[in-house]
Image 1 (cartoon, rainbow, N blue to C red):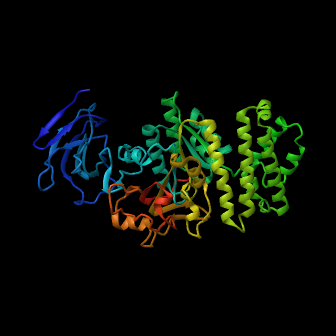
Image 2: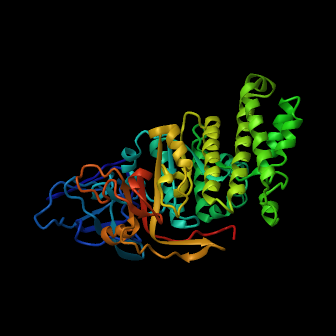
Image 3: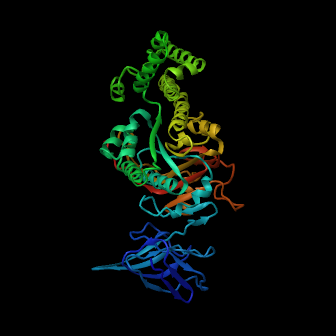
Length: 514
């Protein structure tokens, strides 16, 4: 590869990293922060595609016009001095038969620092360069589990943003799995596709995940994972679920283990057969029965008592059980057992004590996540896909209208400490595609104390990354220890998340399941 250096009085353009194909680029008037609004362009000059190094600027903060032609095989990169980072370039691009002018934001390797702890991002399209996500390396640190949330399900902007962040985690930080808030047995269909690329990504996502994830955006993510594995067969990424809402799968697997491993098993089986949902065979059959969730106190007690007795037997006879089966089989049996117990609590309390219902589910999900990770990615970094409520550090501190009980994130934070990191996703104008709940734009936050409201009105950028530690400032954007409205609940943001990803507009998902 040939390198070109074009000298102009105060400007140096050098070739270095990504391809610019046969265009005449006239870079005119680099515009510095505060002088113009930025918006997602139709034509992008993003960090590793073209770099302009301006070592000096005049008193008017303007760069002079620079004109250069790059060959089709030429690479280029954009760079800026630390004390004067241009926010956008006006670009005239000429290609055979047409020419067009675009104003495009340009992003240095460390992102555009809007103010301490707040970075402007280039967008949510997963095909964009990930260089503007570089602040995540410092923000996340050495965490081995990074959870990516969302304020509401079925918003496609959130899904695309999480896809883009996951690519960064994989390519730059060495993450090797994405664990989804979806029942793990059905999610194996998606896991198989990610590993083999055989079949249809649309079919596997539609059949293997909750309907709220069945979208073109998630198909694109799964396809990217499949393609990545094709290019990196010796260092693949994995996909798996961890939700416990699958008693129709858990009981047949657990019963098979008990019958194979325990000679005198009748008492265990008889009691557990009183657990809710185990005889339906599928979620469709369960939810089609209007009486399916009716649980008597006697059945609830019998179910939990039998599961507790079986769990004690597992503990007391572990060596024998492993000898009769295998250590891995016993781990899966414990996953089935915990899943049944969590489901029983979720459904028993659902109508009259929703807080306890959510708490039961999240205790189970935290256990299942850690158990499956121990089997599939024991020494590797894993990302989680779930709702903000599930991933936050301690939702028992959320206000009374939003399930103020310990959640999955609180259990993972207790177990993993700083190895667990929660990245919440929030938005101002958020649209969802959830028939039966809402289809279209949700009401934007009107509370002037809402973080989303403040970001929309005071920062006014399309895409932002917030480091909630707000380093290097005595006047952070969000006051430490102060309660704000976030995700519709009162909380201290920095006590619940390590960082936030903000979308000013998040369009609805493109559904493939309805």
